[in-house]
Length: 269
Image 1: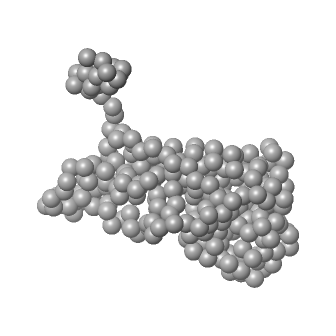
Image 2 (image 1 turned 120 degrees about the vertical axis):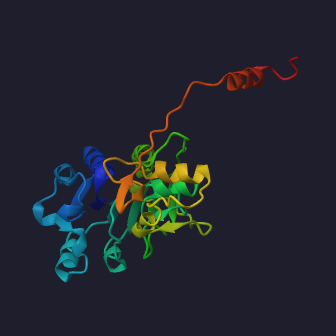
């Protein structure tokens, strides 16, 4: 199978590296422009394709780029943490279509920052492999995997969990994709979708507003992802940024007693 990878970030690097070690035929690479790249040099090195087969994802609509990708005669487009929407005219170049690896439990949290919204909106967290179509993360599902959200999770720790789960799901599902036996299930339910600007609208904490404690804690921890700025409040025109470092404490006596009771066999006095 001849593959063009549309990749970015640590997961993109790890997927490309793993495919090469499986001796898969990577014939092209589409990456973000330099300012938006994450792990860009590592992705390029691991892909091992000629410079003439590496393309800028922001240049999709240039006929020369489309024609160059077409000339690769690839079977499959594989998108991994890639921020640009691959247009239908480009997807049609691949006989096996396009597959995307998304760090959300679709149909929940299509689009940007699923790690944030799973905490803030208390929607299911997870990862999904799905076929690409004209929409944003709306294609038929190949496989999904849930990821648990703990009270001590922040936007950063949940994101790291999602990264690891993405890699695991991809490796487990790839043999079926390669054999042409990957299932496809339409997404059910409305789900949720978010754009980049949606997260900006929850960043400011209004000091004169009433919040439920749970809601306020969830916003602050969801936006805790150093070194990125998180939630903030304004003080005399200046932003004061907030971070939360939740941690489990020792079990209370009450919780220990509850555990002992639950451990008793049925019918015990």
